[in-house]
Length: 98
Image (cartoon, rainbow, N blue to C red; front, side, top):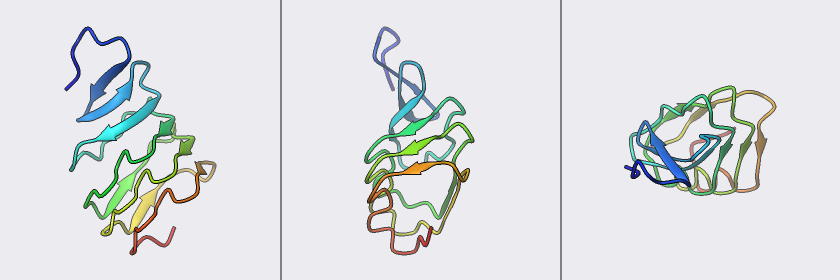
């Protein structure tokens, strides 16, 4: 997904990550296995995905606005209690009651 010589981004599990693996920028549809290095899920990373549930690793500290926007089938997000969730992170996730 990312050229081996890229000094800004890397990829793992069909996800675009910062080179240090701490920020998740974009996930391919169907990709739900978030690497344990991820601390921040950036805006629109999972926008309009069709999964029903997702488990965030304990390393995740923050979810940016609109990160899961339009995930209309999303019902459950398993995450630690200390995750900072920005406004509209789950915008138009009609079935998610988080």
